[in-house]
Amino acid sequence: MALTGLDIYKKLPKENCKECGVPTCLAFAMKVAAGQEGLDKCPRLDEAAMDDLSDASAPPQRLIKIGADANTIEIGQETVLYRHDEKFHHPTAVAMQLSDANEDLPGACEAFKKLVFHRVGEDIKPEMIALVNDSGSAETFAAAAGIVNDALGVPMVLISSDVSALSAAATGPLAGLRPVLSYTGAPGDDGLAELAENAKAPLCVSGSLDDVAAATEALAKAGAADLMISPGAVGIDEGLTFVTKARRAALKKTFRPLGYPALVTACGEDRIAAALDGLTYVCKYAGVLVTDAWEPHLLVPILAARQNIYTDPQKPVQVEPRIYEVGEVTDDSPLLVTTNFSLSYYSVESEVEASRVPCRILAVDTEGTSVLTAWAADKFNPETIAEALTAAGVEETLSHHKVVIPGHVAVLSAQLADDSGWEVLVGPREAAGLGAYLKNDWKAA
Ligand code: SF4
Image 1 (cartoon, rainbow, N blue to C red):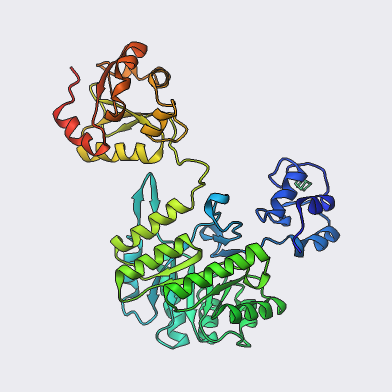
Image 2: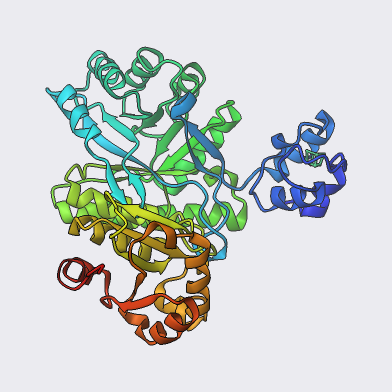
């Protein structure tokens, strides 16, 4: 039975030393009980207490580390079914599927390097390669893994129904690099525990929920700790049922045999369906997503969904409230005002970039809320904008004394002019109108 925070607290050293990164032992105990921290974060816990607590206080879903050193990716240790209950902790790792029978692996690696996209101030990209043993040869598989690793050095998933092929790649060119060993044969193969032990890498077993649970239980008893589960190559209905039931069983029933992150596959001839499956799995509940969406227009929605889903729903995504310079600004350049909600700021920034009219943008601190939300909540008003103008000290850098506010809050212009002493111009209602406004309407003099 799961332990409560108080049960755990009773066994802790109660020294409140903060070495675990949490202010008090009680707070740490609560986090352990909620599955948000592991007992290993408390260096002062003695062995006896660790033994007493470790089984019952283990997170309901295991944290799995893939890759090595700076390229390590963490997945799993999720604590909630629904993002709004808290947040999702470890973003789905996106692995681009590649066949070991591909005759141009170096070319595919070059294509992988180009899959980097910029969205709301961040680079979004897949971070893994999933190499499939289509050749049926352990030798070819290991050689292909070596080529990909030499070219990219990114964490990998090795997918094969042949234990010897997985072993050849994982203990050969990928030795010490902790790839995911995704075994697609029938669970129960005798060589799996030995493989996991020799390769010192996470092992993923595929099949029905019952088969997978039986396999992980047997593997755990045999000493394999870093496990993953997969529904295998099934349709989205079956796959979604698998990951949802597994997550529910792990988190709500503390059912250890399914308390591992899931590896799912979204590939196929129907390209749009494959991309939609990938997007669905990012939302529910992929630890690793293997996709063949090499086309940017199919991959970007998956990456964008991940970027959105793995933010903290209680903390709006925001930029630092300050002045930003876009392009080679001069003292004649326009000064635009918006809020520090990321999407608002980057919408304005990208339209300014596209217009090629260098501008200064003042992002006013509205606690990360958008223009209309902030206005409705009285966080984006003449007083806050005037204060932000003064605090930014932008007045001395300009030859003019004009500020452009979003058209949606035109109603603020008269009061803002009175409060700030600036000439207030009303810009377009939507950022999309900025290009035309800057070229046709803006005048410094
Ligand atoms: S490291 Fe251990 S003793 Fe120190 S505050 Fe955390 S739980 Fe308490």
